[in-house]
Length: 180
Image: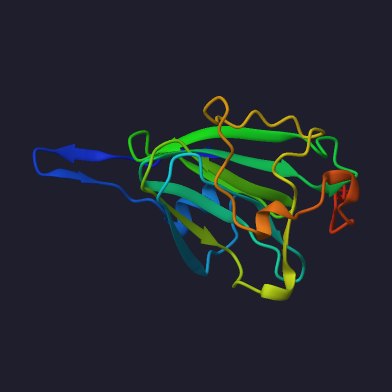
């Protein structure tokens, strides 16, 4: 879900309430967020992801950009879901002030569109290294059209070079139909 917080500006600058638990609950987003993470990517074309945590530490994420811009992607990795293996990609920037809500059962990653990009994301559970997993950013089955300059490879961490493709990913999440 893309969220556009209210923005009140004047000659001094602006004010924006980026997270209010009551307002998010009215949107059906009732999961409390417990930790803030912030990253700086110095180079344009830095790619982080695709990341997720497994149960019982699976995370919901609320992503926003404080400086610069990213192409933000989430991939449905819930086996049995009608959208399994499909992705959504949106541009988030300090200028457009939009945020992306990423539910549990989705791998998340982004590619920086500008140098010195600062991303802030709130998460619903604390970081748990033993439950930290990933999905290959370049899996052809995903069909993600990362906005990389022609002939340029992304700037990747060694960890992000080693994630499995979707076909080799264990079943960490299953889509359970609502039977109520």
